[in-house]
Amino acid sequence: MKNNQNISAQEGYLAEEVIMTNTQAMIKGGLCSLPFLLILGMGYRFLLLDRAVLLDISGVKFPILFLVIIAAVTVMHELLHGIGWAVAGGRGWSSVRFQISGMMPVCACSAELKKKQYLAGVLAPFVILGTGSVLFLLLYPGTVSILVMISVFGGTGADLLIALHVMKEDSQTCISDHPEKAGYTAYKKRNGV
Image 1 (cartoon, one colour):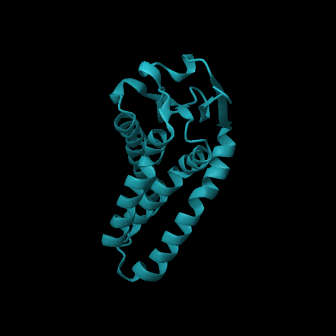
Image 2 (cartoon, one colour):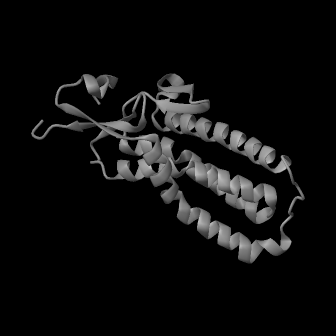
């Protein structure tokens, strides 16, 4: 990028939106996270269940516990996106924005980043929370750790789907989050420029 300008303002680049509906993100994203959930769930069942601390919670206590875990994981998830983009993009917090969309916290990066920089922010929750939840599950198997693991990997499905699309992009492509939809805008050099 020349002189730290926005790539979208430079000649010779074309903007291409790579977006999906919320339903597509949920279904296809769920399919992306399903192998991790199955492998970890089976590992838990066959290797850890005998020493698991299972809570005796019934009635509304179980869904309340699960909702609290989902809320905490979601906030940490979005914060990790922001940290990933702020650090990897080299622009700090100026290009990162947090907002509420559909009663859920959302983090987005408005700057056009190189492919690897963008992937660092997209995959930060999967790598950091995923590793943490697996370690938590191994050290303290039980009701809480399995719910944390389900929340973490269930919540990273759309990120994995977006990362798969980004990895197909050319190395010269710059990427920014789509301002309103699930996905991103890819800024590609025109041929011959």
